[in-house]
Length: 294
Image: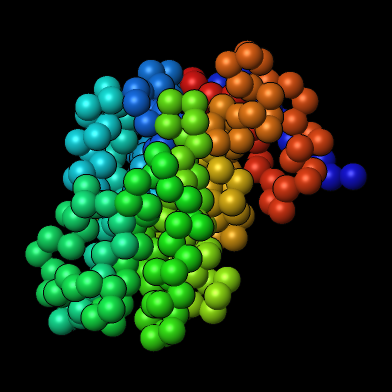
């Protein structure tokens, strides 16, 4: 039998073991409508800890928009800027990929609000039938649509073997207690019919390499020891699997997208025995916490 996974009451119990936290945003710092106050306070307390090197927090988000747009959203929800040192998004990684293809004819599959991902790049936005690359940022209307509504669009793209960049590998996120479909569902559907997909974000290795490089840049190029890096997130498939694949420790926030499975819905206020649920998952975190708190 695998060793039991500890359930933490607060981040303070393990804080001194780490110099860098790579923290998920949606589901950990906010629920899509408001900040989780205790989570922000916990990260502030972590950053204030003294040690051989500064304690850093890099927010790593699968949001399909540049980091500045995410910061504005966090400001609006009330997440304090003192809770983090830097932000890295899937939108940033997508922009880097697009910069490698100057002059590309790109079809944007996703809502207009994600338009800033293309600003200032050498590309032309075109209809699906004229593109040589599709950038998938999500469903046009994530409140009413499903991946099934895109079957014909994806089939037409595959018929021309158009490659896809998925600018948000998440399948779903939590919004005010409900699960909302994301770009990852469309990418998964495209891959299932043989479409070529490049993923920008968690759980894929490049996002962790970029996050550690960003952290090193905060400290005159001194790279953090991976053994002292902790990934915090609420999704097994992205946050925990990504950390596992990269070889760093992880902390699962239970009251996120897996809340109902773990019995921490509004009707069940306390975290119960998660061992059985975790034993059925493809990867396991190093620890579990109900909500991120100090």
